[in-house]
Image 1: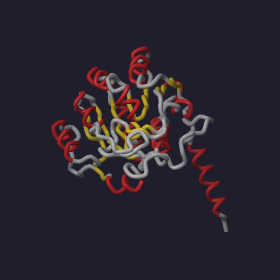
Image 2: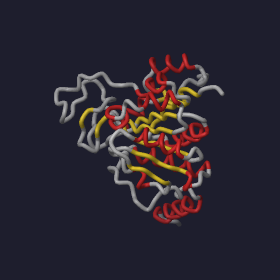
Image 3: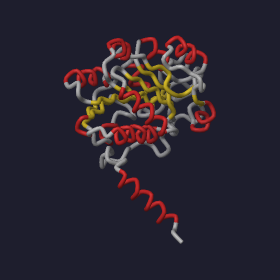
Image 4: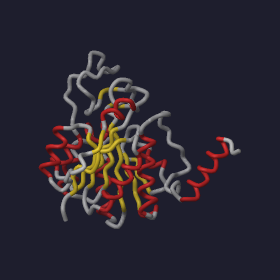
Amino acid sequence: MKTQARILAEQLNDIKESGKLAPRSGSLPTWCPGCGYFGIHQGINECISTMGLPLHQVVTVSGIGCAGRYPFFSKTYGLHTVHGRALPAATGVKLGNPNLTVFAVGGDGDGLAIGGAHLPHIARRNIDVNYILFDNSIYGLTKGQPSPTSALGSKTKASPYGTVDKPLNATLMALAYGASFVARLFAGDPKSITEALIEGVRNPGFSFFHIYTTCVTFDKTFKTWTHLKEWTHPLPSDYDASDLRLAFNQVLEDDFSLGVIFRKKD
């Protein structure tokens, strides 16, 4: 009878031989055990391997934060830029070589606070960049301050009486700014992340992926695994992602429906 260790070893060998680990670098991710970023990492790598994207023709651009070191964990070309500047750097990469597949990655603090002014312009210009927002609603790298997407009343070391700032809705912002592809996803479902990324990469314009995730170290009350699994659910089966007005209504009425929210008709 095979031991559990033997079974796991064989499964790992099958994964290695499948080529699914090819996009991963030799540097292991430095995120906290249990962090949702591992699921996002898996989804991105599955997208690259499933689509057969040549690694030398893929560029991953990051800013600062827990997602900032992402390019180190990937065998693609990468740029680790300054705080909030992943999108302008990614724009430069794409305009410099339109044949490249470009991913920009970053957290809610990096992308919606110091970097928030860049989202409307890359969206309205419809630059062919795939922007993946890791939204855990907290500043994890700098020890748990409230972020632009923290819930009202969130208590942290920096807001011991609860934050009084109304949270931003990143999905709604992307729709309003004119992104041609918008998806909202959950880090606990890497398969759906992969499927949405494949569709978004094929979109000839700006694609935005708003991914709900966790900070297991500093958030024990809001975006926990338990809560996100309870709150999130698929879009209605008859949902029409080509209807922009419907997309706005869906996002305004339901914060936790997941899937491709909007895709612009050709």
